[in-house]
Structures are given as C-alpha cells and as structure tokens.
Image 1 (cartoon, helix red, strand yellow):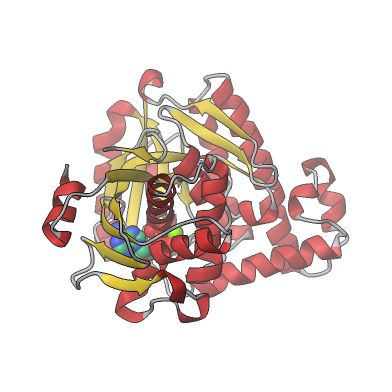
Image 2 (image 1 turned 180 degrees about the vertical axis):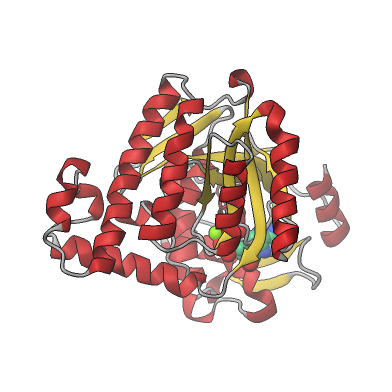
Length: 384
Ligand code: ADP
Ligand code: MG
C-alpha cells in the first residue's frame, strides 16, 4: 500500500494504520449549507490516505507527498489558531487544525507522525480539504481510541477548517466525506444533520455523471463567498428568520416583496429555490427516476449564475457545451468562480460530450479541462 510504504521511507518505521477519506461532488444544494438548508452530495472514488503512528511525546510531524519540503514539525502544546502554519507550510494547518480541534474539545490526542497521499485534485471544488481533515481526524481518533460518531468527526473537521485554517465553510463537505455510503447519494439536512442515503446508480439507468474540472480558480472566490454568507444572514434577519432555510418555497414571493434590495432578493430566491430543488431531486432519486433530475440540475446552474452570481465563463461554457451535446442536465458544483461542473448524460454519449467540451475550451483559449465519470464511493474508513 503506497501510503504505508511512503511512511516507512520517510520516518524509518512502520505506521500503525492507514485511514482514507474521499473527496465529494455535490449533485444539488449549493450555497445552502450555511443557510441551515439541504444538500445532496456523494463521495468520489478519489481519496486522501493518511498513514499514521502514535509518538511517545507531544510532537506532531506532518508530511504530504504533494508538498516538496520535508515534514512540518509542531508541538501539540503550542497549537494556536493565531499562529497556524502559513506560507509554504500553510497546507499543514488542515491536519494540525484537526489535532487542535480535538484538544480544544478536551479529547486525549497525543503526538503522531503522519504521511499524507492523495489523488483528490486540490482547489477543484471536489473538497480535497475535507478529505484531508476527515482522514486525519479518523486516524487520530482511532489511534488514541476516542469513540466519536461520524457526524461528531465531521463537526470537528469543520471546526478545524473554520477556526484554525480560517475558512468559513459549512458542514456539507466534511459530512459527505465522513458519512457517505458506496452507491448512494447523501441527502443531508444541515441543521439537524439528519441523513438519508438515496440510491444513485447511473450505470443501471444507462447514464453517466461527468465531472468536468475546469482547472481554474478565480481570485474573487474567497471574498465573494464571505459576502454571500453575509447577504444571506442579512436577508434572514430582515425577514425575521433564524436562517433562510426557514422560508418555505410557497412563501417565497411574499417574502421577496418585503425586501427592498434587489441583490438580497436574488440571493434569497436562489437559496429557497435551491432547497426546493434538493427536495425534488431527492424524491426522483428515491423513485429511481434519475434521468428526470437533469432539468433541475440545469435550473440550479441558472440560479447560481444569475441570482447567486457565483459562476464564471469556464463553468458556463462547460454547462452550455454539455447541454448542446445532449446532456440531460448540467451545473457547476462547489462554491463557484472555477472548480468543477457536472453533466448528466447517456452512457454512450460520454466520448461525444467529452470531445465537445474539450473542443469548446480549446476554442475559447481555456486550459484543457480534466473530465472523468463519477459514481458514489464509500465514505471514510480504515484501510490497514
Ligand atoms: P478544495 O477543498 O475544493 O480542494 P480548498 O481550497 O478548500 O479546495 O482546499 C485545498 C487546500 O487543502 C490546498 O491548497 C492545501 O492547502 C490543502 N490540501 C488538500 N489536500 C492536500 C494534500 N493531499 N496535501 C497537502 N495539502 C492538501
Ligand atoms: Mg475545500
């Protein structure tokens, strides 16, 4: 096993175990998780593997095969969000943040050596960050025999990203990586964390779900994400709601009439219609009517593009081209301003859609996209 070999080569002894956690795509339910809403992601076959062993002292050594420099060495006693690793070592804030979150929760984590290997592309909207956090959290909690439930594990991983790395993400990515089941998509209520594992079998329906990684990330992503969050919280407060999740679809028009700001109206319309789309896609999946989810996926893209304003030319081109080449539905997935798009297509149209998207990107002068077909894989687990 590659991660175990790499651990031995690096540290000169055998790891006690190898734990892995997957990246994810979100089928529908974008920018709803920080509004206490609904999401419907599934785990990707691409995974992050953490080979790890306990140490007798309070030292944490962190190394990633994707980072050329040697291990980042930290003292557990000195972990502090105000002094998180940064610059070239900034990646180490993700696993170090997990150790910090465990300690901060009063859990008995000790020193450890970690080697990290991954085939989840970073920054592609496929949640390499949650894969890294969840694999690390599972490794440390199993090594130190802390019996956490998967939702507790996801909450700790999210806390690491929010409070230690400083990224204000919702809980979707960590829940998908920690709780997903092979062959199923995860219908998640992000307020109650109620999970429903719904069948998602493209092959049986003669379909494919393509993941089109545009390989771009636009600089405005982080600032825009924070602004969308505050737009939503401002709109919820103006409407006297705890969160936009509490606005039923049937009362949307009335509520929009009570908001003066046209920008806030559009943001609210996206979140409320998106929660409704999650419900409808969920019902279709339960009924095995996969193909019929297509138009809802495309509607979701239009809403993200026009009302939520988080798409970009590369994502719009991927979606438009896939649609023109016969996709049943297509949308951006993840936070936006780059990253990946999804296209639901006939299985035998894969070559044609792939060719069309590549050609369109070439003609527009964009980087060649990475295009793969995805089916729901298992959530985090112990490999060795
Ligand atoms: P996404 O989660 O969509 O891939 P993020 O910006 O949230 O994008 O997280 C990507 C960051 O997570 C990387 O820039 C890096 O700091 C860290 N990361 C993820 N996977 C790894 C890895 N295998 N090795 C080192 N750092 C990683
Ligand atoms: Mg991420």
